[in-house]
Length: 289
Image: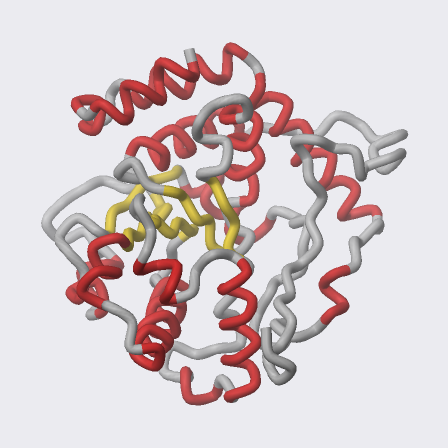
């Protein structure tokens, strides 16, 4: 790293699989209400089954609970390192406002994403597909992230024809009745047309769970939007009451993910997916069993 390149930043988040950092943070707390667990297991299983034998990169914080559940479920398997989180939020950036992101912010974001293994150099040399996943309303976050990556790839003169075949996007949408008139975010967006067919897919959730994960759930990290990309305050943990409650919920999900019954429930959903015809998914199911 040269002297003029920014140091990468990533919001602090406890390692909930090893948990040696937690100390007494969970002492005195009650049992979290995991009313959404059944839907979370179903969603997590479908995200795995639809990732095309790739690596899942969960964008921002909306799917933190998916990350926690799968961190527990996949621990001890060959997939333990194939679920990642992307430190990125498109908040405070309008759909037409890429020009508002200043050059120093772009440099910092690129340093942050490089540290997460998302530089054009890394993307071009990946062996497996890289699949971004996020809670979807209008697709705004995916659009901003995609355009920032495309600009970066162009600036680096990286091989877009190679990279485009390795990118995928999974949107977690509100479950509704399907019909020819159903509004589908990816069909009205233009950027998915630059990717191969089937690169953009969806998993649905009932509205109460979708809304809880995307809008109402207390998270362990602050929203990492462009005004915070270079703010080293995000490196410090929050020990406040709300964060401790969120921590208890996250830890409980990791532990539930480790349970044999949870792994069985994940596999029961995955065997219903079309990808069950492919060897990679059958192999993952065997590991979980």
